[in-house]
Length: 190
Image (tube, rainbow, N blue to C red; front, side):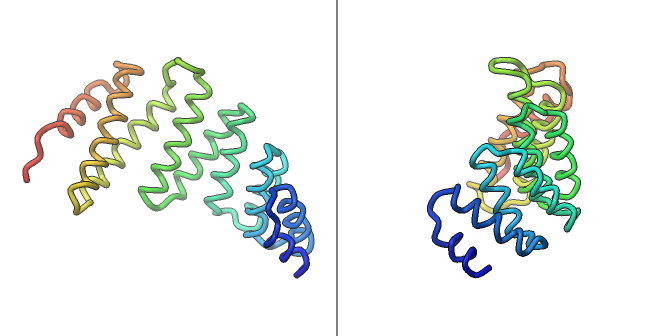
């Protein structure tokens, strides 16, 4: 085991890291951290089915492992299995506790739905809903922030998401989007 751990520590290429991690997992099948690393090495090499197997093994050991669930979603996007990816991302949203993590997951949903739609095509309802929910989270974070630069950053990100919704599908939550945009673009009291 120590020999493989050293091999992993000193390996520079991802293929060697994968081999060492695979041996460690064989010797310690309950090592969640190593399984996650192995899945990552496999994904780096576009070996999505192998990565999926590792993430699923992690979920057998820890059914609430947020990173494994996100990893499964990340594997299904390049396999163009967007419904499966979306299902895992939605599962991850239910488990995520921080606004930042949810924003990251909504970003993954949006990217997946962009790929599903195709270049230059508007987002479908799932992508639009992710934009809407991410904008709401940005607004929430802006309200909780204390320094001006952070507030401005979050407000600008929320506005960008809302404007994109209007551009992609002007009928989507039209009144709600317009109201929130107006609120966010109004001069803020100092």
